Image 1: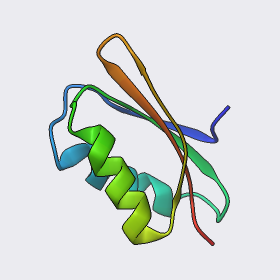
Image 2: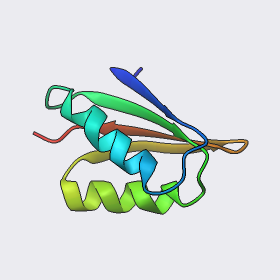
Image 3: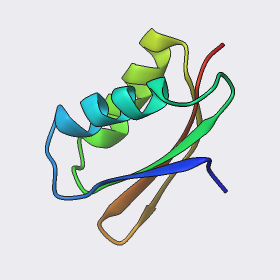
Length: 75
C-alpha cells in the first residue's frame, strides 16, 4: 500500500504529472505515491517523468479505463 494516493482521474496532460510532482515533494525520500489517472497518455508521461527525475516507477497497471501508478520518491 502506498503512503499517499493522488486521484487524477478526469485530468488531462500535463495535470496528472504536475499534481504528482507536487505530491511527491511532500513525501520523505523512499516514500510511495499511488496515482490514479484516466488519460491514456499518462502511461508514457509517467515513464518519462520517472526517467528524467530519478523517481522510481514501481508499478503500472490498468483496470478498465483507470491507469494506476506507484511512484517511489528518489533520495
